[in-house]
Amino acid sequence: MPSNTFHPELRLARLLPRSIVSPRTLPVIRRLQIRSGKAQPVGGRIERVDETVTVRVFRPAASGQPVPALLFIHGGGYVIGNAAMGDRFCRLVADRLGVVAASVEYRLAPDHPYPAPLEDCYAGLCWLAGQPDVDPDRIAIAGESAGGGLAAALTLLARDRGEVRPVFQLLSYPMLDDRTSARADLDPRRMRMWSPRNNEFGWSSYLGGVAAGEVPSPAPGRRDDLAGLPPAWIGVGTNDLFHAEDVAYAGRLRAAGVPCELYEVDGAYHGFDLVEGRAGVARAFLRARITALSAVLGEGERVS
Image (tube, rainbow, N blue to C red):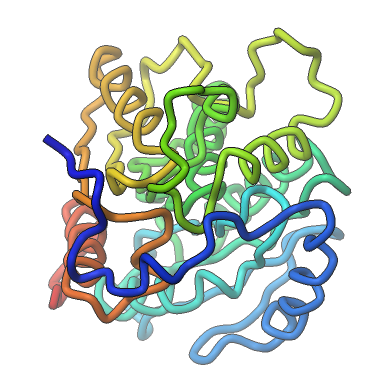
């Protein structure tokens, strides 16, 4: 039975805030992130997709033939964050698995509500599939938090359009269902880094003019048509606001015939692996992600 207390290795849990973003703090957080978003990535480069979208690309040593690829989508509740947040993971994946890894810089809500962020990610996916050093039949999509929600939505969009067919979706505590904000049974004492209030702000910013009561395409947790999607890996902590919706989505993927591995971390809060990356439980989470990707994309990788 999942525990209500925090994992003993996550020692910062009791010191962390429950909420991190609001309409009042949004401008401040964005200003703090500007510099990292513009800096050239160590070991990679920024490349332009179109007039609105760029990607931070990490390539392995020259192989002489097209290699698999990963499109990474950063988190931030649809309202903050930048592609530089994916640098470490993309560099690691490129080095260990010998793939091209690209983190997409998508436009943020509320300035750019749905469908702009999703279409930006789709543009990044199509760009990646068209690169001469990429095997377009071996592309995976990964995302964290809101980026995980966008990754799930992107696999649905790619399936529906039929232009690019991703082979895998790697979803870390994905933000999938706007209805979670209205749940009355959540214990706020268990929440860290992302609260129901944060969630309501993020979703309302992203959904923009989507009519109330409409089943929105950007919310994968509301979608009924999950058949024909690529296999998935979903990782989430039991003290994460998104735990229930992620478990439910994993079950619905399986019911639709989509293979899905669910990796639950007892006592882990939202984004625990990013905040306390040195903790053993966070390192194990990273190994599980790399191992899942390795089974689909990797050749001769080193998982440590």
